[in-house]
Amino acid sequence: MHFQTITPADTAWQAQALCAQTGAEFFFPEPGSSVREAKRICGMCEMRSACLEYALANDERFGVWGGLSEKERLQLRRTPH
Image 1 (cartoon, rainbow, N blue to C red):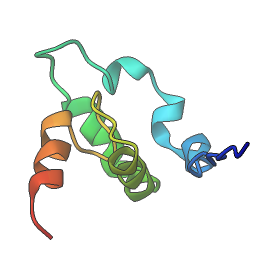
Image 2: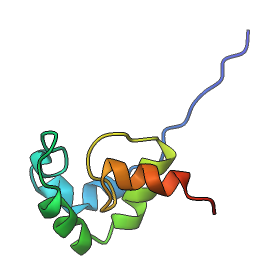
Image 3: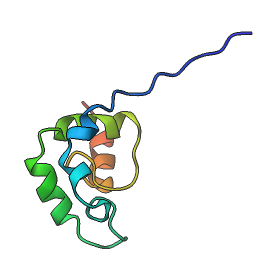
């Protein structure tokens, strides 16, 4: 019998991210609510690129990750590289 092990993505960046020091309500707002504050916080965060990379690699579908909303990440995925 063969078991395939899945290694979790490196999430060490999360402890240093500014969102870890603020409330999740900014990053996971109610539908139709503004994401302006989350994007402002992301804009100051040194972990922004690692966060966006993580969100894209793990197909995060909700919330603001790496300074992008769900719609912006979806659009980024659909853009040919």
